[in-house]
Amino acid sequence: MAEFRLETAVRRPEAERNAILAAPGFGSNFSDHMVVIDWDRERGWHDHRITGYAPFTLDPASAVFHYAQEAFEGLKAYAHADGSLWRFRAEVNAARFQRSARRLALPELSTGDFLAGIDRLVEVDRDWVPRGAEQSLYLRPFMFAHSAFLAVKPSATVTYAVIASPSGAYFGGSGVQPVKIWVSRDFSRAAPGGTGFAKCGGNYAASLAAANEAAAHGCGQVLYLDGAEHRWLEECGTMNFMMITAGGQLVTPALGSILDGITRDSLLTLAGEHGLEAVERPISIDELRDGIASGQVTETFACGTAAVITPITGFDSPEHGAQVVGDGEPGEKTGRLRAHLLDIQYGRAEDRHGWMHRVA
Image 1 (cartoon, rainbow, N blue to C red):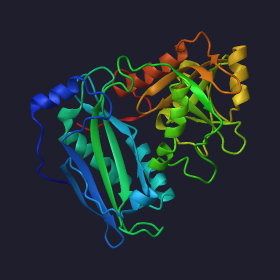
Image 2 (cartoon, rainbow, N blue to C red):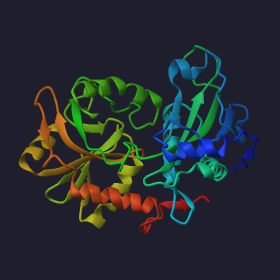
Image 3 (cartoon, rainbow, N blue to C red):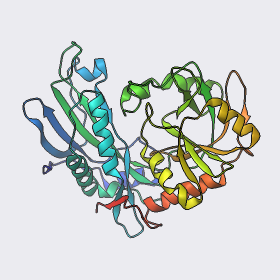
Image 4 (tube, rainbow, N blue to C red):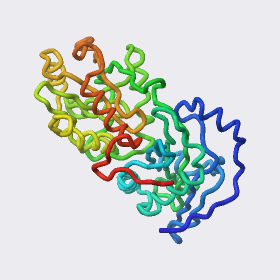
């Protein structure tokens, strides 16, 4: 693990920072510093530094512009009531980042460098960690290829960086905003052997047209079906999908072509403490639709780092029309799972799984 050099940076005035922290929004303001590490084939990873937040200067022929050779992650740092700062399961983010890099023919960053850079950035910019309810410092590690050529081949030069954004609840207010979901048959997110399991920009860019379709039908997100049969549930927009059954199961689609969500995995681990059996298996759209109609499926939600848990209160599709889940309100068990995970992250509940790590 390399040492990170701290470079001189211009810090924004305290009054400006405090004004941002009073109403941080989500992902629209950034702290004073960022992590940067360079890579090339001859030297590998080198020049580890914490520098001032600033634009990159890139050649117009840089590989990332033309072939989207890049990958990213998303995680948060949390302020506890005693003023200490903590991160949540960042080593799992590091492992997923490595898997994404392999799939995109990018160099793998060591777990040690991934964690050390994040910790150092949070330490240096600790004044940017908001202290309000459901507020956090959102951390965005990313790497991009920038060799200047138009040939389709792996880049010989790559830059890794981490930027930090003080953020409130993803949807504002309490952070809980139920959504209605559009079931898409025209768009597929991924297929076996593709990049669905990787966290890379191309997957998210390709989701925007489907999101627009959902919005045009009055829905807040889209549910993707598999690309082969258009029968099996995959992901819900940019989040994993979960449902709770009358028989006491927390069911989610099995991994393969979908993102291995860290919130997803955490909720599966916590399920037993809420009297739920965690089940990972294929779920057909017919099972979901019939289960809602019969009452066998009692609650549905999407989950991810940004919004934690988003209750799904209804579905719509061109073939079958609108369908309401339960009484159309966020489910009780969904709310308890969400509160439990947040309580661990903010230090209000015992961390029995060793998920939290103190940074400062």
